[in-house]
Image (tube, rainbow, N blue to C red; front, side, top):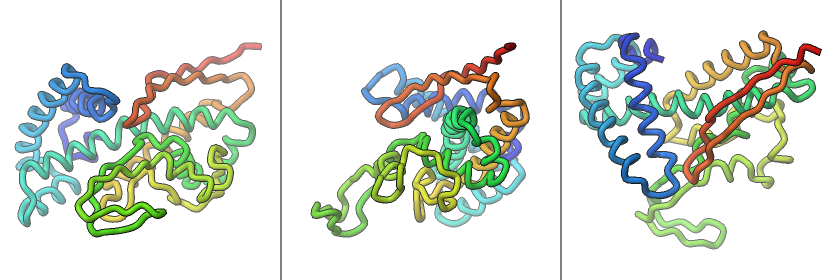
Length: 246
């Protein structure tokens, strides 16, 4: 992850700690002052880090941020983009990986992954939907299923509901790697489409491949996940993998 961001390798633990604090805030389903204060402190530290990073880092990501700064972007915009890459590529990918690990224990699923890894990863992301909703502002007046939404209104797009809509997906709770690639909203849509989507998919594919090569999916292997679900997101707390010697 630090290589992708163009950050120093030894900055990884600190960056991930700040990211974890921000994700903890994003996942709140009720106000908790200590979580909010910790997130604000980590955000301030991250903004200071990014100010130096934009001057010295090398790579595609820092180059893109510097190009944006030469146009209309502000240093706060740069910090926000960095934070989104940091939080969006770590915690949600880990949660999706746990969902994928569980799915690999179903009969025939390791073989399905080997046949079509891209399709399998896409379906894992649809089923897991780590981020539950995305806040948006209506750009114009519109009517959605007989409900009028005026321009400027704040709305919440419930991504996990859309990704499990039976009107869109037959048997939505069923893992079907044969569904169209990226036919889901786990990464958002349009101008808000996740900038780190490709990287997240690569990490998820590499993780699932490693699990398959390690023997996950055989009859002697069991996995037990523990999730923390809030209104905002699903976080994977632990994944226990056990092997039977019999």
